[in-house]
Image (cartoon, rainbow, N blue to C red; front, side, top):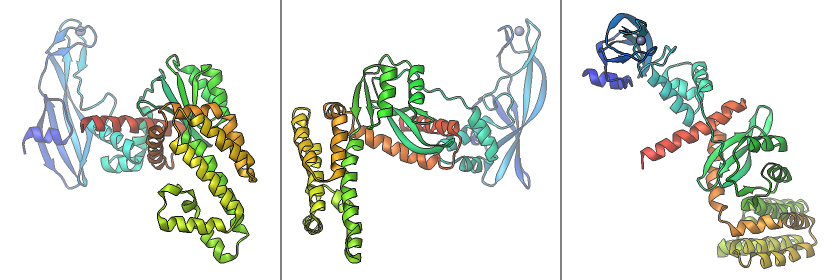
Amino acid sequence: MHHHFITELLGIKDSHVNVWDLREEESHFVAELFTKPRMQKCPFCGERTKRIHGYRWQSIQGPAFTTKEVHISLRKRRYICVSCHRTFYERLQMIHRYQRCIASVQTTAMKHAAVSSFRTAALVTGVTVNRVLRWFDRKELTSSKVLPRVIAIDEFKGDADGERFQLNVVDVENRRIIDILPDRKVETIEKYLKSCDTGKVEMVVMDLSQAFKQAIRKALGNPLIIADRFHFMRQVYWALDEVRREVQKELPKKDRLRMKRSKKLLWKSWAACSDDQKKKVQQLVEIDARLKEAYDLKQALDTWFKESDAYNVTSGLEVCLEKLEASTLEGFHRVARTFKRWHQEILHSFMYPYNNGYIEGVNNTIKVLKRLSYGIKNFERMRKKILWQQEVKLVLKQAYK
Ligand SMILES: [Zn+2]
């Protein structure tokens, strides 16, 4: 085997590291390596020197080849400075200071920890899970403290450190997660925002949460707040579902099951339904006047939502609100109250293009990271994993462009 090929297999990037010997033993491979002399810069005084002081053999854990690990013996060189006469070991990329494991193993483990579980990262690299966790916890990750022009805050169910929900702060225009906060309390959000440089923030996208709004006002003054479209339209679907369940309860058993299975069909936009589906919807809403009313209201809002633009959205919303208020259904009254309370923020969502793309991108990311962080109860570890995952994915994306 070519020596160069061996060092490459071992993930060694130092070009002056050479192979002395490689042999296979029953339980492992042994690779003996040595370094070629090189001009050094004294770490104490900065003088250049090539004078050798001595050698030391160092044992290093290498990567695993198939089922066998590689044990590396490295003959390290110690140099002596011609000026200050102090001695020092040569610097190598292949091994970090105070580590017993080759750097490429650690790098590989950290790469796997970004895209899969810590357990997988340990298995692939042949080290213990505890060691992977130690490396991971020690790893430094910096999140930007300068917030961009448009941010979004959104919660997700992360179940870390005894809090069910964690918060995601996102750079909407660049579709990047900026940071993860441990909970959704006003104080937490406020404290975070105050720790950042928020001079550039002009707009904030968020769901209809009074707590978020309060925190934003306290920390940022008066940025433009945009209601997240997915979140406010969800209220309408929930109101429809409330009616469906109510009607369902009063039905005979056979019809009850049919009604139960129709949730998605009733949620579907009328225009998107096939002829067959339209017929089914008509049959369903004939069953009960309340359901018919709820369905028609949902349709009115759905049409307004899909067909409005910055110019006609306000008048369209007025018409919808009148319909909602004239309704006999309590659930839709609630929708009307919410829409009135968030009137301006909802209108903003039609005037600025920071909605659908944002939702799709971030929801996807959250889904992946939820799966990834499953079982991580330690918030800091979860936060780091989410940010680290994003960083690795960005690098991969750029590499394959
Ligand atoms: Zn020196």
